[in-house]
Length: 309
View (cartoon, rainbow, N blue to C red):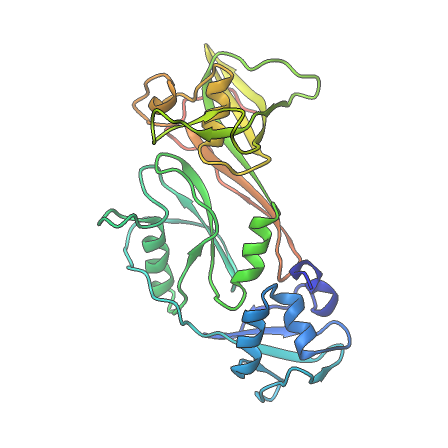
């Protein structure tokens, strides 16, 4: 059963973290303990781990068997356990944009990796781990998506192993709408509804391992673009991803002849502020609470000024 059906079995707004290491839920209709867990977690292996590990508890703290009957209003909890290896932690300035017991969103600065690459380079994941430790939690964050080193903006992290599969399914099925701001030279083509669609497959560049390119042998890639503001020969463009290919926005804008300012890899104009690409909005339906989340991030100071939108 898909995690998107969770609200049919669980009160959509009750999940909370009741102290460290426990997530509480309120059952919404008659079901078994197994049905409840399958509605929350789209992974049979994880459901089995939770139930067989006596992590699913009733209101009195007793372990629930898989066939235990639950009725509307029943209080249950999942004991959260950390089994994956902790990541190195680091301290540093980090803007927290959203947090609940299962999900966290921060603003990634430019010039930092999301994940480690085997070197001692600083990572966003380490900064998030440091933030969680300051909050007094033992959670180990897991990034749900990536941004290029030079790209700034919103990155989401899962905080619980038990409910990680619900977020993995959300990402895999395209359940997140992601929008970016980019600065280009020149003007995009005009479109009746304001949006220009670039439907062009993206493949690896055989001549440069760092680059991607538009090519018939590539994977399908769709980007929607619209102009938000102009100033001189520059345009502030909003980009919405229809797919999630590597360097997708950068490649598609370069394909149109409007490489992003500061994007040296794809022929963009030089810029002291680096690559002018920023993930400014993520919209998703929370797979556990069923809440519609709109997470936003302001235009960075490194972007040039544009008339108010």
